[in-house]
Image (cartoon, rainbow, N blue to C red; front, side, top):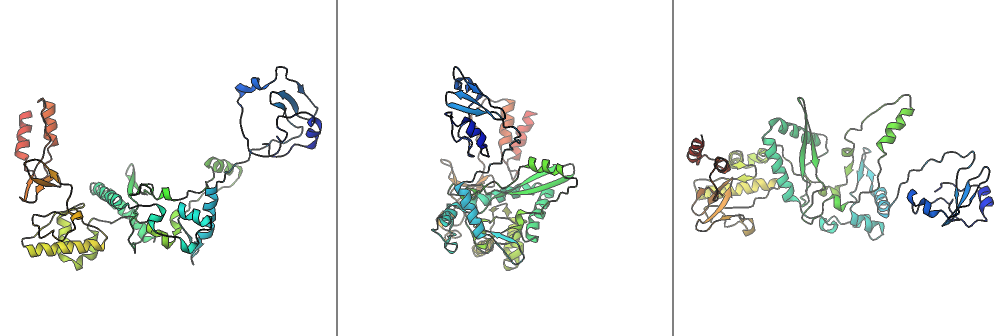
Length: 424
């Protein structure tokens, strides 16, 4: 400030005065702004002002003489856009220039700019061939349980809305058809959760799947946390809109799926994994011929992620159990929270994979929660639990208590019906 040095005539005229800043006209950043409320305090009790024709004036202040005013025939000084570059931005740009490439079709291929690797590479401590792809080296933990729960929640939501389910299948199917998504060839611990954002307008339904790279992994860090963001590259929208008004003819266009046209290099694709299936029964449709017994089981004995199955002979149920495990392993689905009314069936299951979230009440044995009911595996019996405490019996409290009784198989219907009749 300013962006150009003043002419020599100004220095010749006022060079003998002790200026507050002798190098005030040397272009550079502004160090401090003084508010207008302090202006009277800066002035001397007797502020001398020196005027010169065709030149700025000088004003005596507590800080020294200050040059103020305009030059004759001077043009309006337009402010320059200031882009502040940081060391991290510079490292990110260096990483991008070094790692970006293009394939035989001309498509760009980029490497993910992990903070740790970018810094080591920028310092010369790491070559491109030495970059470690171990998630622990970049701070990422596991997110598989979170991503799996996110998928199950999405499927529960979609099962209630067939139209939305079909739209979501179509959206994700387009990813596969266009080659923007493919079946992973190696297993990764970090998986990006995703959910659907729906917009309904009149009879039109629009869906967009949001991939949550900001979701924290088991280490407390997300994928976004581990990446360098780089400098701002977008032009301000107001500048674009105003600039086009200077032209007589304009056109507009949209780059189709721009970000999806850029490839992630093979080494970094392990950090781009998601969980998806077009149907909860997709696995048995693809591998069903190998496991005919399991096909019907997954259709009729599975509720979202809970499997409840059995057979009339011990040999048959053990064989069925092995078939289920083998089929789901092909889709990288892991089975846990095992329980059985026969210890032989679960004797080969690791202890940490057994049901651990059991429900225990004194004098009532141990029960495992299964689809809203409680199953005592030793007695092989289902039971209900209610949290109805001592309360003042009013119409409101009775109705509330009746509504809280979850009865998926209708065993409590005679009691609930009697209570409803009493209220009528």
